[in-house]
Length: 420
Image (cartoon, rainbow, N blue to C red):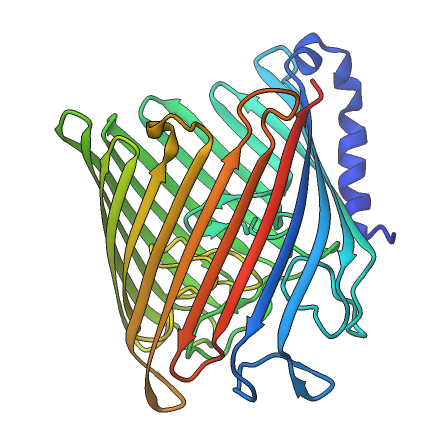
């Protein structure tokens, strides 16, 4: 397996911190775990010869099918003693092909080579240096962010990562401040870092970029109220403001109303034509094991909302399992139901099902509509030698008036072993 220059440089950072191991806090507070994930995915393309239908040897594909075994080794040290604490984290990833080939690749789980064949295995190693001062932590190296303006994708065999630096401060009670810069991304089915690209439906002028800058704050004035603001910029592509309010309101004994309002305001940078406003609101009633939610998302402007391409998940309410519902001027609504079977005396078993519909947009100059239906059934073993083993079945159906329809199933088995 070829080791790229990013790994070599980061390995030197890790080696430079090894003398710190002698300090007690560094070792005593360290953690090491190994997560194993078996992932199978079958995507059935219901239409032939659509513009967006994947092709193999000039012919429309009938399906994409991939099966793999993934391993994720995660190490996190404690911090050295003193006013300035130092530490190091590391992430090791390995993906192994169990079944797929040129004609059925493209599900996004396994690495596809330039000739179209599927790699037997692929891997990645990413160290991260960290420093703590008070309640502020600076990290430099590999990141797997869950930020509203850059949410790493972890819906396949291995997670997506970014390379860069980030600082998070909790020195002020009820206020979390975050800022950082990412210089490259490694996609979920890749071994190497690369420049970041933009996706924005209907936008032109996008270029590869090695700068994603962001800063934001999360304020929690009450346990039931959270307010968040972020500003982000993918250099020479787009700038983006994000605001979010989350509120929980008890209505009666065991009955709660959760409100989630998200707003994105995105504009062009460089020579792009990005122009988008995205306002979404979701209201969810929760009673014992039940949760029933409804959402509406309104877009305005000349393009769809921009985000980092290659699998990064847009943090919008109607971005779901298969589709993001972010076409130019598209408006969409969602109804969702969740149930935790612990309320029936079956802890560990859960159900999620949702339906999203979008309209008011065009494809090829023609009015278009689309919808998606998702169902997740998951179970986590609660006791015995397999305690913690989790199993999940995901079923997806997508239909669009001028796009390729798909039916999809994913089966995921995972287990995390805490080594220390």
